[in-house]
Image 1 (cartoon, helix red, strand yellow):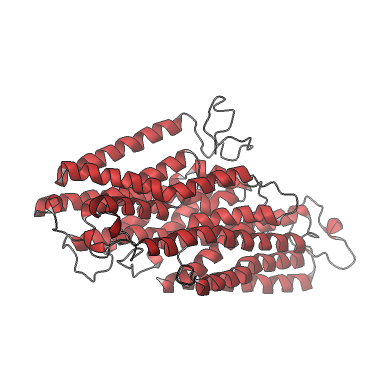
Image 2: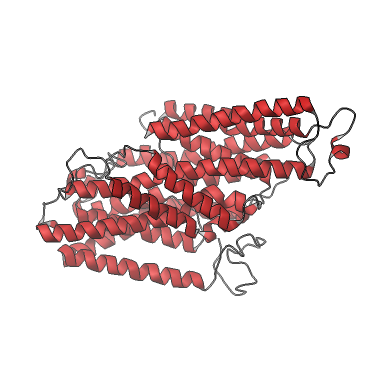
Amino acid sequence: MSDWIDLHAIWQIVVVGVLLGAGLPALFAVGLRALSAPAGGQTAQAAAGADSDHVYGGNPVGLVVAGVCFAVILAAIGYGIYLIVSSA
Amino acid sequence: MFGDLDSSPDGGDAGGVGNTFLLVLVVVTALGFDFTNGFHDTGNAMATSIATNALHPRVAVALAGVLNLVGAFLSLSVAATIASGLVDTGVVTLTVVLAGLCGGVIWNLLTWLFGIPSSSSHALIGGVIGSTIAAAGANAVQWHNLVSKVIIPAGLSPVIAIAVAGLGTWLVYRISRKVAAGARSHGFRLGQIGSASMVALAHGTNDAQKTMGVITLALIANGSLPQDATAPFWVILTCGLAIALGTYVGGWRVIRTLGKGLVEIESPQGMAAESSSATVILAASHFGYSLSTTHVATGSILGTGVGKKGATVRWNVAGRMATAWLFTLPMAALIGAGAYGLAAVIGGSAGGTVVLVLLLAVATLIYLRSRRGKVDQDNVNAEWTGALVPAEDEPAEPVAA
């Protein structure tokens, strides 16, 4: 079986794929949600109308959380570029 | 595959002048293949960003083109063995490579005409296998490796991509459901551009390298380079430019099928799809298991349809693609074998010239045929009504994808 299918490589691809390929967009969503969180007392709709393009909701804590999320994502992208350069 | 291009075996390729002439034909055809590789695969990176209006179509293909060029330069040590272990390298001559490239180019153009994303690597491998069989018989092909390194990965990669992108999509919608719709689509469009750029970069690195490898080996075979040489700068430059130019021209037909035909895509889905594609492609090449960019990208887009509640997934379109994928290896092999037969019957430089002229004629015919039902940056995002070519432009156009 393993003569035909490289199970070792496949499970690693699946694990990395799930952690980064699905995890990073999820983290981006967390960052976006934190960023758009309204300042105390308001609802999201009140802070920024449902069809508004305004991403920042006015909550400073949310801004910090979002900053951390986006920084982690940028670091992952940097690592990806590093892999491209080094694996050749 | 082309580990040891023998420069002076049997009649046809022998002789200094004939060889240099054939070498030029191989280089030109390889760059032509690289160009088709570029425009065939633009959609892998940019189809979702174009479909959600995250990027203007022209800007999207320009960005992808530039990133493909950058990607081509990122990998400095180009391996001189491409998919080694698939055919007996002792029988591979310049004529075999030329015929194999023809198989790859023609299959790429045909699938593009029908708007079907299919693997350019498979087309190239198929073409070379066909011309090798025609030159030296079926025993020259290492069938076990073909199954374990090419066919089985091709079957697995869309499944992995569907799972990853499906999970990512589900998570993204779940987490962002309280974000106002306008802010959500605006934010994810930005994320989409970033993730799509990574796919374009990875594509430039992986796919431009294949052509660099082909040309480098042809040069080695001709004695123009020493055995252990890596790709000279002009090879890296021309290959990078060819794939970037192809990408910029934009395979609008394939982009339309990927962006509008398979799934109706919103920006969160687009970001999940491109993140999945970039990660799976990079992880696969890191762990030494080469997967086709096209198979992964198509699987990812399907996955975003599976992962979003109530999304429309056009499984009939997906089925038609899967069918084309099944035919890619054998059809490119048939064309490659035919091209080799023709070149061998005529022999030498004349044979190579006839094959190249025929290739240009077929390419022109396919191009002219595509003009009858045009898909370009203006109608690429038109409503999908079951046909590749939007109805306004060509009411009776039967071409569908």
